[in-house]
Image 1 (cartoon, rainbow, N blue to C red):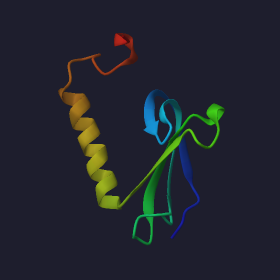
Image 2 (cartoon, one colour):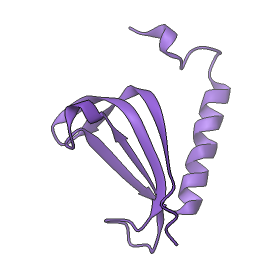
Image 3 (cartoon, rainbow, N blue to C red):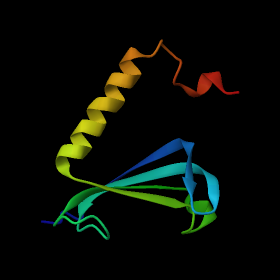
Image 4 (tube, one colour):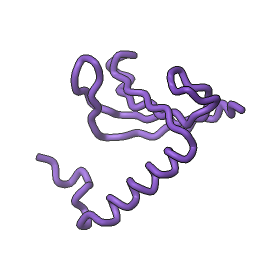
Length: 92
């Protein structure tokens, strides 16, 4: 069932699309019918920079199990990194 609930978060990062790298300033996360994945419903994440238009978007469609595994992997990677290493304070 589609919830039509969308969570958005402002981000600082980069993504690579068909035209190359672009800034990522927002992510939208929602459960809906996928456009490509062969499942009835997926957790969908759109990484985007709305200021650059619709071409500055990378979409991900994950099963519930894959989404939960990704959350666990992200948490583990951040927990194992030295404090502050993954923050924006170490810009190059």
